[in-house]
Length: 307
Image 1 (cartoon, rainbow, N blue to C red):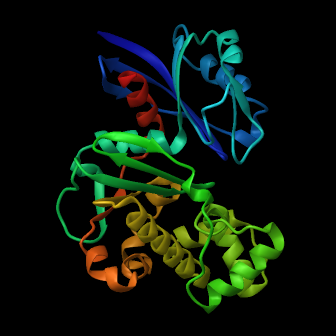
Image 2: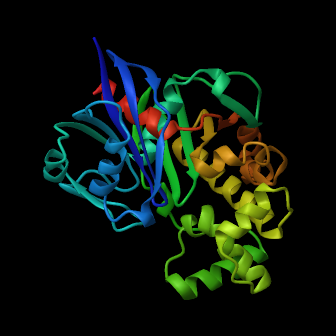
């Protein structure tokens, strides 16, 4: 049976809304997303009302929601923002049927459902990735998302908050600086959007905003900090592959998508395989970049459709 639901992908920086047409447990179509900066809107309720005002016709009363934070409590809060959501508040907005998944769980749902044409080779052997083993999904954005797909089932994690292990003298220096600032140094402090500025600060003593640095990177500038950023991301992705027993690794997230032309020529591969006696095994793992502009919205729709 066909139906139309609303879908939302709520991150620390952006809130994206769309409608999705479902047929049973399949997603037939996503509308063009409406995007708002979470810093420009006071709450999810205000963002929802802004989205509804732009719809033709009545708002759907069903919602597939991807949310950047733990989603297993009665009230959920963004990890990198003050927004909170609870089911009573959703009902007050006219939303009576909701499925909430962690934002990176949603991305993993999309990874598990998309065809080979949506994956670019980053490193490792060519060919399609296996769908019947373990796939590690990692994605840098406002934070650092981590999920697993195990024989088709999605496992949500908070792996981005694992501790950071420096692997060279520069990273030792960065680690000392961040430990003085934060106490515990998490991998998300480096292998994320804001992480580039943390690395750049130690290398140059320059307090540039991370948005300025990423604009430079995406315009083609070669920054020493970006070189280290790619190495750190690759090293952690390799560590996750060992921990998860992964048969494949997929890099997703907002930055993963925007860097799909840069990562394959970066130090990512060098550090991904640099695992001592396990280097041969690491070279046998296909690593792909997810080439889809809205995996969070798609994944939220898939999670809702499949219940």
